Amino acid sequence: MIHNRPPPSTTTTKHNKQDYKSFQLIPIVGKTLILLFILSFISIGLYTSFYDPNRSGITPTTASRRNPNNNSPTDLSHILFALSGSNDTWDDRSRSNSVWWSPNRTRGFVWLEDAQRPDSSPAPNSAPTRVSSPEWTQFGFSSSRPAVRIARTITDSFGLKLPGVRWFVMGDDDTVFFPENLASLLAEYDHDEMWYIGGNSESVEQVVMHSYEMAFGGGGFAVSYPLAELLVENLDRCLERFHYFYGSDQRIWACIAELGVGLTPHRGFHQMDIRGSAYGLLAAHPMAPLISLHHLGAMNPLFPGQDHLTSLRTLYGAYRADPPRILQSSYAYDHTLNWSVSISWGYTVQLYPTLVAVHDLQVPLQTFRTWRTFSEGPFTFNTRPLKGSDPCSIPIVFMFVKVQNIGTWGTLTVYRRLDPAVTCRRHDYDRAMSVRRVFVSSVRMETDYWSKAPRRQCSEFVNGGGRMRGGTLQIRIRKCGDREIVSTVE
Ligand SMILES: *[C@@H]1O[C@H](CO)[C@@H](O)[C@H](O)[C@H]1NC(C)=O
Ligand SMILES: *[C@@H]1O[C@H](CO)[C@@H](O)[C@H](O)[C@H]1NC(C)=O
Ligand SMILES: *[C@@H]1O[C@H](CO)[C@@H](O)[C@H](O)[C@H]1NC(C)=O
Image (cartoon, rainbow, N blue to C red):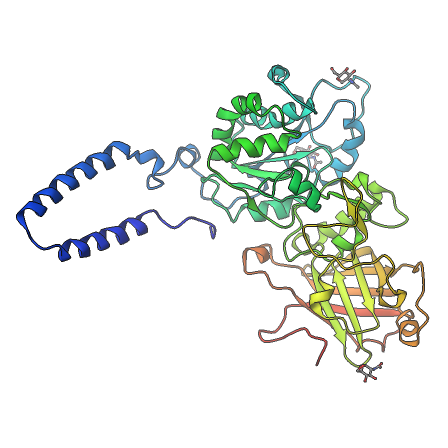
């Protein structure tokens, strides 16, 4: 558990030592001694009257007494998903849900305001539904009535008292989770402490309007058991007072703030508050596991020529083959040809017939606009402009097609070239355009890869870059050598 707080005893010991030192420095005058004794009695009295062993963190919390297997590593079985949906839209939304939901592995429910019609037909293998308990209708609201009900899905989920739950993960019916990565992430935190883990928005206009300290609900967020317990105790009073907020996530955040718990932000939860194409963002994912994607239906499909659902299945095909590696970047240079290659594993490969430094490659090309006002920015991360750029500065793009297993230890992913909208008329670009496919081989990432200090993996050209056969460029991703650097200079 790397995120544990330091044991409470360390600070106490420090204080005691200092007190002892200063005590020695006091001239021994009878009057002062008497005063000291009186003072120490008062402070011991104060200390014991405020001291509550159940809250000190020294004795086990109620949560750890509840479950004898409490110290086993956290896995998917310890997560209860609390998804919010609507009886009218669930049939449709259940299609994308069924891509990531697996009935015997993921636990949880989609909470609807009312039962679905008898003739409804949600996708097979999508999350089971339940109807929200009706108390939510008593609370006021300013803009969105469902926001109250959605906030209470944590109350409804907690009330089920299902065994072995360590984390409640809230999300929308159109949030796509990557459950194995989520479980690995949560396994790093002590579920007996109060944690609120999520991400915020991509659009600055959205975080300014809501909060930088809030987990945006569409990207999903995790609440540990003890925090859920305290939140549920207080939530209805918060809903009463915070009726003027827009969303359910803002209500939850405001209520958690009063419990003294702050957001632990994590890159990899994606609210996806962007419009247009998410390509640039997913082609330059930060060095963190992919946890969720949201709003996919509101953007262009992830893969050109495929609809939303097919796109999601395509990406998920890669994910299943090597979950921790999905969308992870790796860069390779051919210093003879002056080529730069940027891989976003399982999604895309970009080829530049020039040498582009890593600090530029890792910045997303801006293929999107802001969520609310469809503006060119700003975003909560840097972007590289795409609009109006010289066609010769735009990379040649290859999209993921399929994955094959190599034995039990590795994979081969295949990426096919897209026809560029505008072609650069330059000799070096023409030569790079002779690449039609990219094959990428890699060893599967260890499941604990992300519990260590994150380091991007290295890549190398197999057969030396441009000396490829039949228009196929072959690249191998591998661990970097201890002192290996990836640079435009050799
Ligand atoms: C889930 O488990 C049940 C009982 O073991 C089995 O009958 C069912 O086919 C499984 N479903 C899936 C989708 O694996
Ligand atoms: C969903 O619930 C609402 C509210 O009760 C109801 O008006 C609507 O008819 C329901 N829709 C379906 C498809 O059952
Ligand atoms: C690569 O770039 C270097 C430095 O700009 C240049 O001297 C060399 O000719 C280039 N090589 C090719 C194959 O274009």
